[in-house]
Length: 480
Image (cartoon, rainbow, N blue to C red; front, side, top):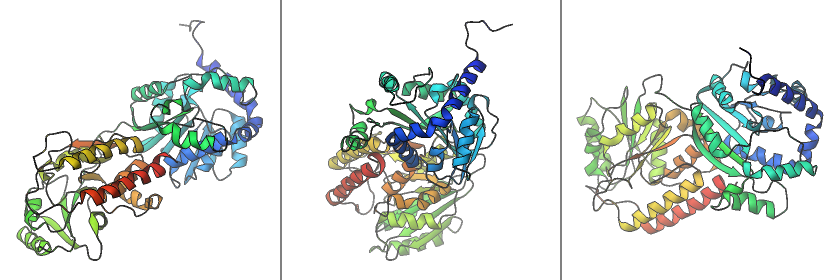
């Protein structure tokens, strides 16, 4: 049966695009230079989400400038225009460029990151193109997509009329919700999303004000030119069984040590427990030794914290010594019940998330578990970090956090971006997970009264430190 004449022919659409971009190839660098501020800002945006040293595929690579700026360990660019590919290969011989079309892919190789910058408007069938991306994805691949906001269509058309921007063929104008829906239909899930570049012209003082501050604020964020999304393939369970290490930082927690051992369930193929003891004055170290001797059938280790101070230092020491595939933190005060930890393990091993942390603010908590000022403070910080890190947080300060050891090792390798700033350990992990675009999932837990000892947290001095961390995160994660 022949195709009705009023239905667009995909091959005609493709040929028209090839002709257009082939004709544009000799002028591409001139137009980039004319709008250099926009293109340099776009490079910075993508470089924030894609750390150097990973394999990167750029679809619709043009003459290769964005791909080169990302400093990939292996960089491949594909474009349906032979002339664009020829120009890119001349400019960046250390990268690989191919003629290919995301809607009819010939490339068959997986990458850490797949970049689609400003091309969704040119696709004949966006959903089919997104579905094709699965051929290029491993389980840890991230798709990073930028596209123009449909609100900017008349402004960009005016720019073309005035000669400020290259004339474009007729294209799709998609709202962010449209792209999110198409990704969902193609079996991807959103990790994070935001708007960028409220002013694409490099006007001194005004451009930084609009693009660093205003575009991130409620009421202004929808005015951004560029909608940016990070997505991952929807996951199933991990293909191999996982082992587990539970790290228990402890200082003056003698009465809770045996309970931490006896109440921690076996998880995965093997469960290792590591106590990191922080120079206690109540014989916690000796109690750990006694419990280890009492339960020889359990894999329990004891690490003295030595000259180190704070929970953050203890967590790092414990994670460095861990042998499990999955790393977990259990606070030694047992205000989070060890019996609830399989929920965290299962959420990670089933593929629902890659960084799992607890929320104490959903279920009713015991009367002495959290004082009213602490509750208000936690709610404030949850809003602040949801805004800053672009993933939902109900409770940032719950001590129970879980991630793969392989992800933690990458977090450590890139820790220099934030530096050694966190005595608690919570924010070092949260910031690192968000920067790595890990899928963050919360598990509601029942928050219990402390049965032994007293808290090591000072509401006011530590609260002030947490406020400083929020400000620090805004400048490192949001106002970049």
